[in-house]
Image (cartoon, rainbow, N blue to C red; front, side, top):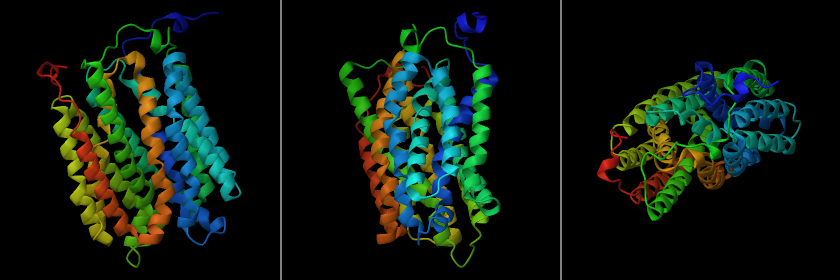
Length: 406
């Protein structure tokens, strides 16, 4: 029997519980990708590794599939529908987390994390276009969504530290895995079914119309900026837990307390996305992105030469600007791309950007083991400078396309 929910066109805006779960899903996405990085010391000890650096490369599969899987996920999101893909996301990533909790050696762990990364790939090319498809203020919506995503990073730091301390690293995967499956069931019940796939809909035009040549240029700059930005993001979010442990050695060594401090950094820094998201709707796009990127360079150099509490404050400033730069790529897609193509364009961008930047996870352990965190932070400062140079090639928008008017 066909119900009204199955045949009715999608409403102008989702029920609040659906919007809430779409934002929660962003936090879930980032949380699961960073549980391993937060719990790696405990896992390495159980699996018989002498140092966390030797186990860290086994997590690269998750980040590689996180990027590579975005291309088919975005394609299916536009052709099948975004609702069904989000249900697959919730159930799949929760089940993969439970499987990860059952692993007995490093290679089993690597395979389970790779599967987790494949399901994690669904969110960005599907969930964010789904969230903004009815938005009149996409910058603010993306900023709030980014805030939710970064709270997931904070939760990974705090909750993983507590669960590892009291219940063990396996619980750090299993408990959120079960809760995520429950969220998927609620989402399936409350989200209206789509009358047609996004690729067949009318409307949803780009906010700013560019010529084909300028659109190719914008996509190229967007992808190159995403690669460099994601390298910094992966190096910091996957390495900050170990960086804090090293910087506070002899001062503070309780993993739960260090996790709480790192969660505090991420929580405060997450508010930058709310601010930047609102600024995107009100200010010229290119200079705003440029200066937020430029500010990362001296702050990363400062962090390279500090310890203990000075490092804490330097790292807080670094993460404010790293998180603050995140909304730009998604805002560019909303700004320049028709909604019927957004999931596919986002998938292509993510496949290149996340695929290349997954090298950060592979290289993190060997680089720190060979050169130390100070050298790594200098390398990240160089990457930030390169990203700033790339942003300079972003097309200038015509005066009629000012953000406030759009």
